[in-house]
Length: 230
Image (cartoon, rainbow, N blue to C red; front, top):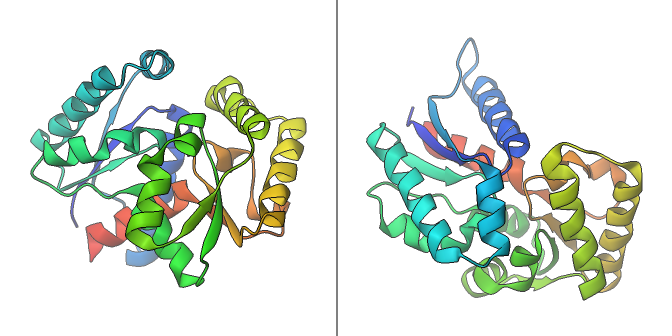
């Protein structure tokens, strides 16, 4: 089994889900008392969040590279970044290490293509929804069309992530807002919707909506296990 290196803490609530899913998947696939060989480097999300909103992406890139290199030195055979937004610097991180980095958008694209979907909606932080580092990879590398909410809905999605979900706060009113936004994306032609922030699955589950959902936390964690044990 390859050792999985996890860059976590963004937020710790979603990193906890990564750890749980990875170990449950290893147990399911290998049976018995098997659990994952993994190493996590967890950052202080308060520092990360401040730098994100100050637009200091060069500083963030240095932090992420340092995390990845520490994990490699600690014996990791593969790296995963336990958040969608920080894949903004995935290319720089990957080029700074000598082990593979498993991109969350690639893992998600494989699940979308299994369903033969050509057009999907994307929810996430405003960074993820507005910029091209995530959408562009799905479009250019995987030929998947991506649509996002309007500006007002984007703000709602973003605020709920940072003001509630990253703090472990789950509100029924917020769930209803997300359900309405997901429905609006479906009405615009989305065949499915990517939960493109690792905190969103804490709020929205597949049973909450009829539209097929792509839980990036679960998809990415399971993708890492498949790589580790193949």
